[in-house]
Length: 97
Image (cartoon, rainbow, N blue to C red; front, side, top):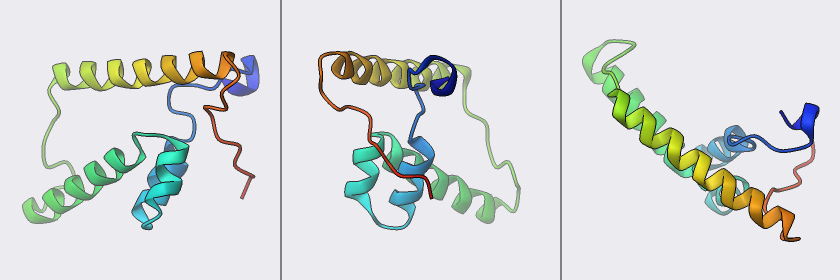
């Protein structure tokens, strides 16, 4: 989305933020995306549950939960986007690896 429109998507920098959280760099993770540590914790929990149950997919998320997650991501994105239009650097400028 960013390459086509110049506007970052709701999950821009979420992968890097999750990776930073999983490697113990919480400040860097929060700088990239506020949901980075949350996604990292969810991945760890899901992994532990999958190992415990010995199933690749140990459970399902209810549709209502997916709706709340999508709404939270869109709300966070809207705030960041609004801040960036007022001159606040709300999206990080990470160099390519």
